[in-house]
Amino acid sequence: EETPVDIPTDPSLPLVAMAFKLEEGRFGQLTYLRVYQGTLKKGDFIFNINNGKKLKVPRLVRMHSDELEDITSAPAGEIVAMFGVECASGDTFTDGKVEYALSSMHVADPVMSLAITPLSRDVGTQFSKALSRFQREDPTLRVHFDGETGETIISGMGELHLEIYVERMKREYKVECKTGKPRVNFRETVTSRAPFDYTHKKQSGGQGQFGRVQGYIEPIPDSKEVEFVNNLVGNNIPPGFVPHIEKGFREACNSGSLIGHPVEGVRIVIEDGAAHAVDSSEMAFKLASLYAFRQAYNDSQPRILEPVMKCEVRAPTEFQGDVIGGLNRKKGIIQDNVQEMDEAVIEAFVPLNNMFGYSTELRSITQGKGEFSMEYAHHAVVSPDVQSE
Image (cartoon, rainbow, N blue to C red; front, side):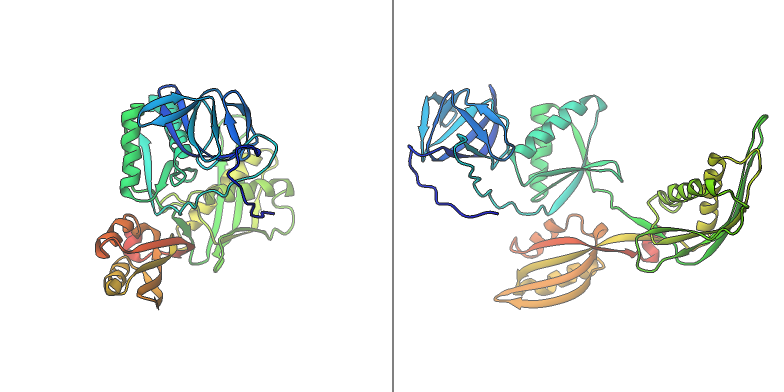
C-alpha cells in the first residue's frame, strides 16, 4: 500500500534521489539526478528502488552547458549527473536506509503508432540496442513486437515524435529504417452452417495414410472461441485419434483462407468417420481434419472481422461539426455528444483501420486544440466493399 511521505531538503538525512533524464555521452550513459534528501557522494553504494539493484557511484559531475565539472558530493536540492549507471527515467535511488519510491511522472498514453523495419538484416543488434536505449530515455515511447503480424511497432505522442527517433536511429546508430502503417489484426468468422466429409488417403509403398472425418461447422454468435464438439458414436474412429483430429481443426483455425488471419466464433462438430487398421495414424487424421475444415470453410460464407475502437474526442465547441464530419468519413458511429464547459466531448465507435494518422488530421481541423483517446471495443464484420479489397 502506498502512503505519501514528506521529504525535507536536509543533507543529513538518508539519501533519496531521482533519475529524470538520460543521455548517451562520450563515456557511456549519462544519468541526470535530482537529490531530494540526504547527500550523494562519489564512491557511495546506492540502491535502485525500482529494480532492486545495488550500484556504486563511479563518477559525479555538475553540468555547465556541455562542460563537466567533477565533484565529490551533492547535497539535497542539487541537480547532478553520474556516468556508467544502468537505469531508466523516473527511477528512485536511496542509500538503503529508507525504501521510498518517488511517484513517477505522469506518462500519457501514446496516440500514434508506426510499424518499423530495418532496411538491412545485418543491423538487427544495433536496431534492438537503439530501441532499448530510446525507451529508457523516454517513457512516452513504447515499443512492442506484434507476434501475429511479425512487426515491430513503435508508439508515441505524434508523427513528429516518432520521426525524430527514426532519424536519430539513422544518425547515431547508422540504422536505416522504413516505416509504415501498422497492419491491423483482422479476424475471420463463418456466418452459416456447412457440412464436411473428407477422406485423406495416401499410398506410397509401405504403410500409407488413411483418415476420414464427417461433421459440420457452424457460427457461435457473439463469441471469440473456437469450440470442438465430439459427437462420435461407436468406434468408427478409435478414441485415441480424437485429440489429433481436434488439433488439426484448431491448427486450421489459425489461418483462414480469406486473408490468412485467425478464425474465431466457430463450432466444429465431428459426427462420424472411418479408420483403417494399418494405414490410419495420428498424422493422417490431423491432416484429414485440416483439409476438411478448409473444404467446409469456403461453403460457410466466411466474413472478415475488423477491430473497432471506442474513441473519445475533446475539442472546442466551434469545431464540433468538423470533428463529427471527420468521424463520419471514417465510418465512425457516434455514440454520445456532450458539452463540458466550452468543450465538446464526442464518443464514437470507429474501425481501427481508418484511424491511422487521425492525430494529425484532428490537429489540423481544430487548430491544434483537439485531443483524442481510444481503446479496443470489439471486432465487427467489415462492409462488403472493404472485404472485396
